[in-house]
Length: 486
Ligand code: NAD
Image: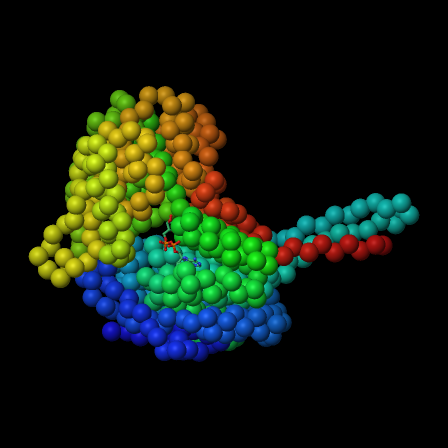
């Protein structure tokens, strides 16, 4: 059993009142850690430490040295790679291969890529004419915003947290991170890395705990937090936006999705099945970019449903430590109940269950974990709950379509606008669809292929603002103009 403490001003600390909460394994349901439950005082202390860091050594450090240190952070994560993999596997229950090939290495990369963006991206300058004929020069400089509150979710904890911490620190800010209560481990481990590398105390702080009336809310309501970057559910974003209205503080939001996968009859069929299997079931369907709605052109509809069913039924459930397992549990019992309630709703609303719909049985301690089967439905009207609402589980509804116009209307009939994945070999179709689907991110013949320099974010209720590459600089800095009269 591990004890996970807050990390405030360079030191690991219990909550001020000593209270903890339990972190439960999604694989077996047993308690694997006790975690500090932050008080308001703890959060205020972390914010004060961050503010002092920006005013102190960190704020005065030459940019080149700051960026070198962030490269060193990435290298130290790589040195301790297996510890990060084990910690994240224990918290999420997801397969080792996903941790080793995607979530942990990309977490490390987030420190290098944004250090390089800050080093290489210029600011603008304009020479202007003036009535006296002597002119003036304008140039802009970027300054850190100050203290950034980072509120992150549980589905890819290290990757999504560092996606914010990396650029925030590269731009010269200090951060107070509130990781999800479900996944506290890697944020804590990163505190050790920061100390090892010599990042000054107070630059990186972690406060554990829940959201409403707890660590999350204590952070968003502290007016010394200059901006909040948040990834999570849309309704949590609404609460955070209300809190940050007090003081008119800036927000960057990456929120929910109900993304459409669109498969045309002229696609490369095998590649489309591989891609859509990932988009529907990777990370047990707990990916904001995942596709819970699939639209398949009629000539290949039956064949597609059958092939995806066969692939889903070949999933190998198992603990991440078990060789060959490739399908993990949901994050928690609470989330399992939510997903199973949608499995029931789908049947109540008249779905044909192509596969799944229940819970796998193991005959071992895994039966106490939060497992569900990958599930596919057909034959529901578009008004059905499982087509309208984000479930965040390993499930999808598949519907046939005939024309581009029809599928554009279906794909856009949602309040969300995060991503889409389109499968076709016709370049014209690909361009027309990419233009017409109202989302922040479109993939053609691929899914979740990320170049960290590109804009990332959602339209409609899926987000506010864009992060990634130079776009992150827009949020994590204030751009100042200087006008010099000659
Ligand atoms: P969540 O909104 O429940 O929690 C996210 C974080 O917000 C947690 O740290 C939580 O403790 C905190 N929080 C909750 N209420 C709060 C409040 N009132 N004030 C301050 N903080 C509060 O989301 P989740 O269940 O952890 O994650 C799943 C959701 O995240 C899904 O909707 C998914 O689509 C979304 N997501 C979006 C992206 C994206 O990039 N768009 C990426 C991953 C996940």
